[in-house]
Every structure is written in C-alpha cells, then in structure tokens.
Length: 383
Image 1 (cartoon, rainbow, N blue to C red):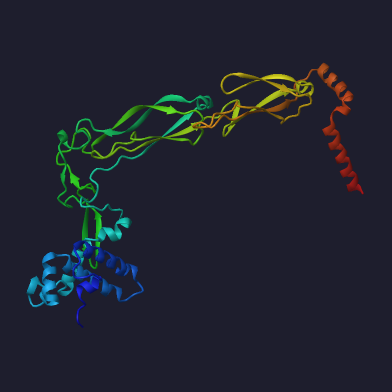
Image 2 (tube, rainbow, N blue to C red; image 1 turned 180 degrees about the vertical axis):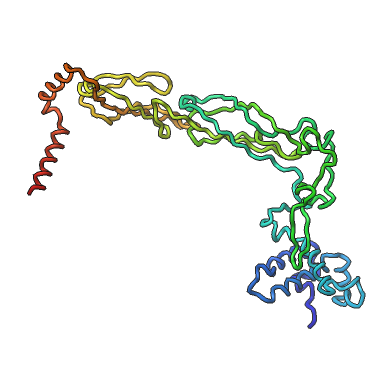
C-alpha cells in the first residue's frame, strides 16, 4: 500500500514553514493520541503516521530531500535511512518527535513548566499565616501592633544564591538545565523530576556553609502591622512580600494575618451591632427610672427605663456600636433588661412581699391572662 504524502498526513501545504508544521503536528497528535481514542482501532496507526511525517518535515535537510525525491529519498540508502526503519527505529523516531510537543499535550497534567529553560531555577517562597488575637476594644479603635514572625529570609552570606562566596550555580549535567528527565518505556515517554538537581535545573558545587545551599536561613522578624478599626473574627490582612524567602533568589511569599477578636465580658457583637444585658431590680422595673450603662469607647450613657418593664425588653442607643470596616458608618448598641428576683430575703422582707402580693392582684395582667387560659383548658378537658 502506497504511503500517504507527509504534507497531506499533517494537513498542510508544501509551502508551510517550521512553525506551521509544528502547529499542525500538535493538533494531529492531540487528536489521534491512543489514550484519547480507545474506541478507534485505527488511531494508533494514524498517530504513528503523523509522528513519521513530523520527524521528516521538522528537519530542514530531510524536508529538502523529501520535497525533491518524495518517499524514495529515504529508501535504498538515500538520505541517511528511512525514518521508520523497523520497530526499534520507529520507537526512537517517535520519542524524538513526540518530545517536542510532550509539554503541550501533558504539561497541565504533569505540572511541568514550558519554555526553553525548563523548570524555573528559582522557586517562590511559601506564603505564611499568622493568627493574631485582639480585644473587642482594640477592634473598635484599631491599632498598630508589632508581631514577631518566624520565617525564612535570604541568606546574608551568599546573598540568596546558595553558593559559597555568592558564586553562580552551574547547569545540572543530568538534565542539562531542564529540571526533568525523560525515559522511553515501550510506546510511551515517561517524564520525572531530575534526581540530581531535584527539579531546579542547576546544581551548586560549593554550597554556602551558612545556609547549606538553600539560599535562605531561619530567622524571627519583627513586623509592624496596622489593624484597621472594625475588624472582626475571620478578617484577613495580606502583607505582600513578607512571607518566606524564595529558594536561590526566588521571589518572596506573602504573609497573611488572620484576626480573632476575643469574647468580651460585657458586650456581645453581631456584625456592627453590640448587645449589653443589664440587670435591674424588681422595683426599678416596676416603677421605672434611669440607669447608666457602659459603651465600647469607655464612656457612659444614661438610659431611661419605662415603668412596668419586663425581662427581655430592648432599648437602642444609636451609633454606639462598632465601626464598619473601611468606612460605612457605625452600628448601634442594644440594651436588654434582665429583671432580677431578690434572694436571701429577711423575715421582714418576706412579710412585706406577701403584703405586696395581696395588694397587687390587679397589677399582673400577664399572669392573670395566663392562669385564666389554664383554667379554661382544664375545664375543657373535664368536659
């Protein structure tokens, strides 16, 4: 069976340049790869045919010979042998051709980085997290706080290069600076991280004694952090470039400060609003009066209690809550009354309360209504 024209196999014209040839092969390789065509028995043969065509057309000399003599250029000793001569030769040619687009096909799955230089030689430092606990008063007013962060910083001795005396690292001889090596296993090419340089693409012949060749050392740094007013638990503050130093001169990571606001003894917070539970005596609740309550800014506010107030009654103090983060006004403060029942009564107090109870039968409408409803309920059950 006659071979298909290589240009026809890749779907390009004879005037196609190297970039067009490579682009066409990438498209065909993705389309025909056996892993993506398990239900197409002809895909593998077409895939090999595309590999063979690309192996010839990507090489300027082979392409010139093919343009002049066609397939005959690689038969009978012309042009240095047939590109697919035998199964062993075919596998070798496949590895050579397929390696050019291996990253395009599987780079996203392998986690590799494309480009002429292979893997990035200098890696970015890790981001750091710092948990900072502050009081509710500090969250209300905002503050400037100094924190001590243990982190990795660029080595002062080698200036972050990792080499003794600040010398430049040399290209890894195992992977030629790619940071990865490939091995042919049957039909497939397997890629793995270079064992010599651990994927860095470079090695250091004389590592720095201070950092052991890492280019960074462990150190505790003091940082001044501006905590804005209105922060609440879960607020995250990012300090760019204040994280861990990169490996061998790589960029520094970021520092993220997570805020936790401590519970308060007096106030409870809901977003920008504050709640304060205030106990009042039975007599104050019954007759009414004025009480002083604290505010989060350290001040005092006078609140008038209406006569006949019950437990759970709320009163609002506008603008006495927490400020909204990054502006947007201030919340309110809610006073919740808790009518307190006296304890440890003396005989005289008990006697007075009994007398008071006899005189106040008509002063407890809620109790009267409740027990009236209870009596009706029991009567209905009897019926």
